[in-house]
Length: 373
Image 1 (spheres, rainbow, N blue to C red):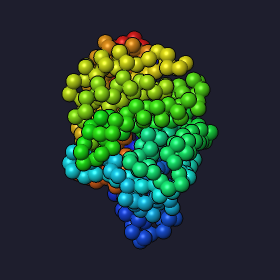
Image 2 (image 1 turned 60 degrees about the horizontal axis):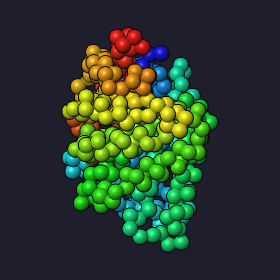
Image 3 (image 1 turned 30 degrees about the vertical axis):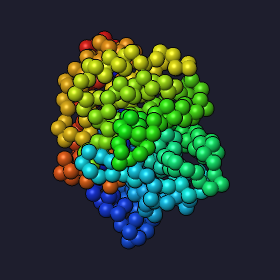
Image 4 (image 1 turned 45 degrees about the vertical axis):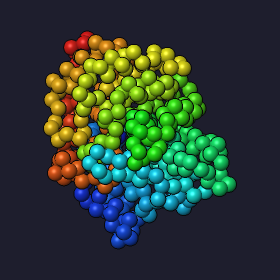
């Protein structure tokens, strides 16, 4: 069986869609007008990704807004929560703050998936979902929500995440990956962002495992965890945090596969070795597979298939061949409003993303042949 390969999820939103999001949040256009632009971008995303040869396609998360304080906010959330991350270029992303219980998703990932499935003419789809560990940060770091103890919040959170993942599979997704970009950030200890120094990594892992425990081993083979040091506006939030702080804990999550940023790492071989030592062949009934990052979405330069092949061949020296996959370091644009400054424009970045995906597919084929897989 050839080396498996998979996209993380997001693609840069075209300029017209980013403008529609801004206009909607400003009250300038209706919800129907926004949806029309989302549909257009999602259709284009699926169609173009099918042409790359990607095994499982996505709609590029074109329907997901990053405007945490905009008109899409749930009634029991305020926009003035703690920072999620402060990026190296100085910009930040802020989380909502939970005002009262119960926690309920306003929009489920499977609802967006259902809208985009008809666009997939020749390929199956996957879906990315938000991690319960990310949403854990909606609850005050210190303190409580009146009438809503943290224990009940956690139970509701696990229930909602399970519902979202099951809904994706029931809608037709072949794989579901959980975005865990907060994993590496949990060891940053940034005094400007207190939760990153609160030793939450074990809490996050345990919480994510609570969700995974709701699924059988057969189901968990198709549930993945994605980790990266951020990828917003062509900047990162935790690249300086050593992988040694994260990897042993990462593979303690009982997921079937992991999408791991690596193309932009300086010492890839060292991380490959750490992965090889930490990855499990039996994670509560499922063999884990490490999809190593071979594409850097933050760099406009397009990797060649030969470069992709070389990374995979090198990784095979440290990781068992039947536990290696290939992916991109991160979603190409996890937040809806992202001008992609290193690329010059989101439209150009979008074109580059499809070139990179295509070359990943070609490089994986080369590596599979070279390794006799």
